[in-house]
Length: 64
Image (cartoon, rainbow, N blue to C red; front, top):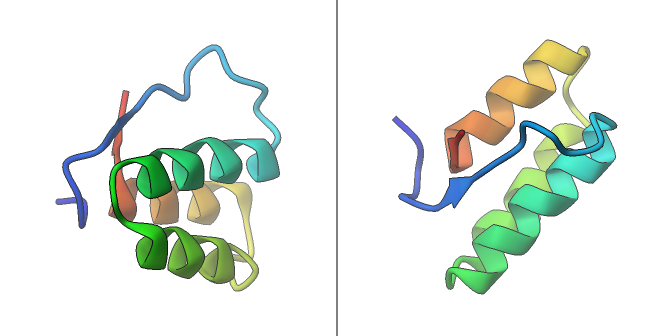
């Protein structure tokens, strides 16, 4: 279950992980969660794979 109810559509986006984090972070900030956006951006640097990074994004937003 994600930390927020913010919905983010990642399909059809540029698959570069930094772009996907940017999309999710922007949605978090726009939804009133600037601290979680910073937390997500910081956490991505600790991920060791693309899949782990996607899983982290899904911990913060509802991915569709």
